[in-house]
Image 1 (cartoon, rainbow, N blue to C red):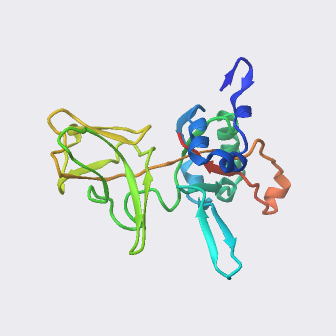
Image 2: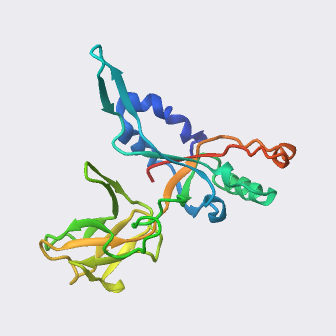
Length: 244
């Protein structure tokens, strides 16, 4: 996206530098001004990529031998290397074509995490009981999809903005909700109940779904060398999570 011939990307500072000054939330707010394409990175390539969540923690070694630790980011930010999923020249061209269509790092897009793409754990069937997304008050009709990562010591709630259309199923107090009783905005992850189906006070709203990760290319050029590729050297094609 350009405004008066000036690329908007130039107005966004380096992520790490700006994060130190004003925090990740503000950086994500700036990124929301960027264009997002509701298209998915080629699925056959995403199944073999490497990568996962990144967190930033400041660690200070104290004079008494202990550590002081401070979390810089509230949420994790995921990074992937799409180059690790390339297995043929055809795959390489598919990435090149997708890169060009997105304008390099200008436009965000959907990406399926090869491991974490469902409301349930890998290998478990997805059901409408998987994730608690809210509790009814008799008035609120809209709820944000979310996924919780928990163990005995702690819990983290992750907002899900990019559910896969047609995969969302809901339950109210453990009872399945008919498809016509709610609508899902697949671009934001917000579920809204129709009139007459608004959850009553105290009723748990749970959801099951599949989802994508909103990302962009974290590179401004792709270096192609067929001889090197045939020799087994795969180009690095980094992707980074964004807030859509």
